[in-house]
Length: 323
Image 1 (cartoon, one colour):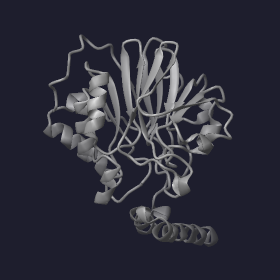
Image 2 (cartoon, one colour):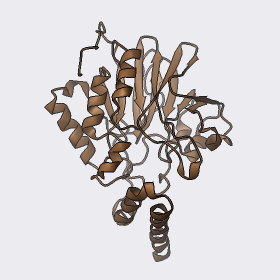
Image 3 (cartoon, one colour):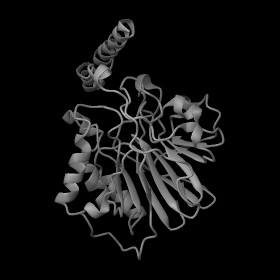
């Protein structure tokens, strides 16, 4: 027992030293790894509060299920897709704190996999290999080399491009997040996806700091608002992390400015990726919603929780809302 423990400690310390000296821009991450060594022994992987069952809803419904971190299983009028799937016990170094709400072998009839960028907690090769081979992987242009050995069909998109399959449409937007994999294995591009089918719309922001430019682009694309915005709310401490990540308040504000009719927080609770307490992001997110009197618009799901989007009443122009 002592041998593996010592090995884990040495592995993390060496990783921290390598990050600090070889990749200076990752020094905050190196500091995090060193400061959180104790979690390897004190934090046990918890079971998710709920488990997802597939299918989650009916073919004529739009249902979202939170698997954990930035992984969502989406059933949209008969189409099943998944975002940034990670089922692994680690995102390279950080340990998973809550088990995924569903296992990849339970997800059948999967048609699309949306990848926002190449960071290890969003593009996990082991998880992708475990998903059905008939699923199409949609990813940022420049990241093809990372997934070249996978048997799946790949569709690489730049920002402000669209991809359609029958009556399903994806439109891409560039977020404020440098998404390159270590050692130059990928592009720096991080994409958000507007997913549309029928009268429904979902906006998935894999990772981003607050971006007024992104808000304006989304408002132009969807002047009548969006049914659901999936927004990241964690990994914001130390302060320099907010160059690439939303604080809970920024995430809420960005979704409101986009005209979200439902706001679902993510990118929290699953991995300890930064220095804020694991439960702080959701507490701050809820408090911000209370302060702005928009609690009816937020849907903070537990891992394993689902939300079925109801058919919206007459959709109004949101051009003068939440400036």
